[in-house]
Length: 209
Image (cartoon, rainbow, N blue to C red; front, side, top):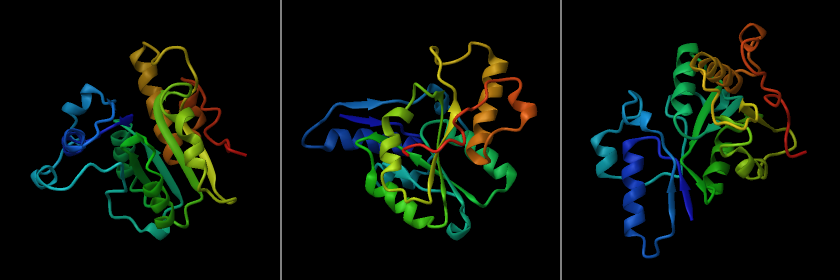
């Protein structure tokens, strides 16, 4: 099967086109929220629709110096746009944000190419807005860890494990969302913001050791 998380109209179009043109159509599972239909950053140029193909992994879109990057944040879905907005507002140039548009089969070659591009990055972060026991983290962390060297750290930035997908309280949900974005881009959120929500106990924990 294929599990895809398209983040732009062009990606959605080329994903469906690929599915129809393949001689052998494997089951296609698409995970994408309705909110991206009206998100101001989830847009595509006509050239992107008319040409190109579905990209299983999308590298950083802003012009930053690859040699200056110390942290790579990987994510899927609409949390990408929260991360991008926060990084742009902070004018950060040491964090690269990379989208995994296909979770399975995992794009190992593309992932390793990203690691080679940002050779000075030692912190590899998986960010998701779902609770830790949901989302993609437990399904792909071993694939994220595999090509890393002994000096690299694989980190998790997201909500703690929970039985429900969300708190059901909008203000708490928004605070948690803000905290996980800070955790992904900078590390553990400052104490004054984390008091109002759950700490991110594994935001600085090395995995795979």
